[in-house]
Length: 115
Image (cartoon, rainbow, N blue to C red; front, side, top):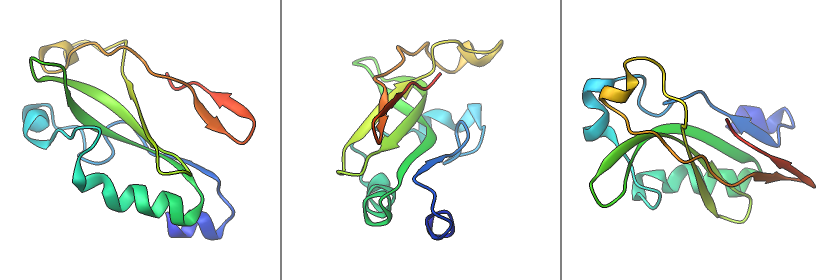
């Protein structure tokens, strides 16, 4: 993130499941929540570097403890927004639940939608 900031990057997007790698058998154990304290260093760095940052992780959500593929966006003001994958690939449905999407990400004056 620091190198990207040095290059003038204002929006940094990491790949799907970038925090854990694609490990379906371990997804539940590796899953985070939107307020997970393990995410605090990323949130702090995004704010300090003034760079909207999106990372991928398995997300534990719902009252039944469903695991979804998620993109977590760390905004410039410290806010964290969550997008969950709506269209799973063949085989993913055995581990992950279908997501519900998410709100657009505001970058400068633009609304960017993740998909």
